[in-house]
Length: 100
Image 1 (cartoon, helix red, strand yellow):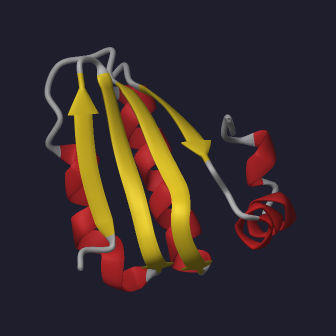
Image 2 (cartoon, rainbow, N blue to C red):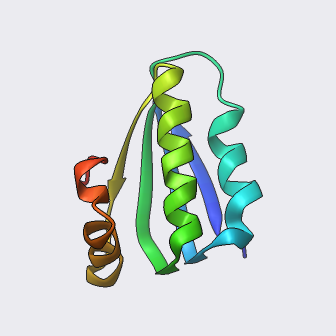
């Protein structure tokens, strides 16, 4: 099973993380946003099924954020379990990203 799945409905593109979110997901994760054309797409990173996240995942999210904002897109992160939310808070990502 893929660690990253994508579902687009209109101008919202949902990137769902499944299981481990680590360096092994780099290629698959970066492809989900690097190939999007146009502007005004709302990206939602759904962490509902994420079981684990490491520092490389934090780096991937920063790269995604920078790329999206430069290209006129926006992003939010949703459905973080308490352990994942704690990682975001400890890394001060709660100040960089919008969580819903």
